[in-house]
Amino acid sequence: MSRSNPQGTPHPSTVWLRIAGKADGKRPPLSWWDKEAKKEVPVDYTHFPFVVLDQTNTVRGYSERHKASVFSNEVRDTRTDVLVVKIRGGGVVATGVWNAIKEAVTSKAVGGAFGVNLYIGYECDTKTKELAIGVLELKGASVGQWFEFSKSHRSEIYSTNVVAVNGDRRTLVCAASDSDKRWRQENPDGLPVDQWVEARNAAGAKLEVVAYGVKITRFTPQKHGSNEYVVPEFGLVRLQPRTAVAAIELDVKLQSYLAEYFSRARSQAAEPPAGTGEGAQPDSTDTGAQPDANYGAGQEPAGEPQAETAQPGAEDDVPF
Image (cartoon, rainbow, N blue to C red; front, side):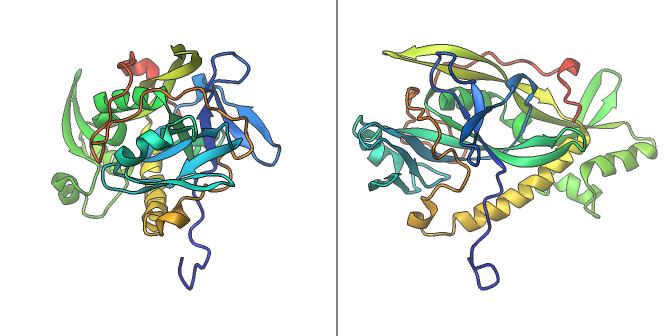
């Protein structure tokens, strides 16, 4: 909030996606909540590749006692950042770092679960191939599955690289990032990576842009006690250079919003933005594995067993 922007920067996400908690087939495994129409809109996950921009940690769930949703602010580091957990219409029920409030939040009296907001870039227009920011909401066992996958593929998920091509051999030249010294030296004009590679290739170089997105390969049913639910399995997809560039530009917009968000007071931040699924059918069955207390930047909590992941290849190229 400022004098020139008294309302603050609006949330950049255009859609909030969530995974069905129950494995009864009554709801699509992936959907978003249309607030105006007050209904779930199914998403064909087999044709929904996305680019991961960032992720934050949160609490979400449903209180059977209060018949209301459970939610919190978003944090980066669960070891040091304070979560303010609320029940809609019932006020604050817990405040503290995750390890200190975990038992209370996940109790039957509250009904909360550890969650992740996965900020993604997705194709919002099939004709123009334009990307928009969305949020994939994960909780319970889906969180564990994502942590295992992202731990194994961190460099592919978050990096855009330039490689030299020599027959079947690919050699890393540099990362298209300001943190890479060679990239800064060889691209002083700050050209987008696709334009820079195109110019170098016109001068006789043989370079490629290598970047990956993520797809949900399938949903598998699981059971925890009497609760039955579905869990996504993730795979990698090769991105077109223009998509990798668009994702970087989209992330700049996202980081501007997040910088402002994390500067707010915690109580103010612990209010869900419009479009997050308020009014949707409660999704309380998948509580899954809850993370350990020592989860912070660059670390993942203990989760579910590692999922099978598809190895990227030419057949996985995303044409958008």
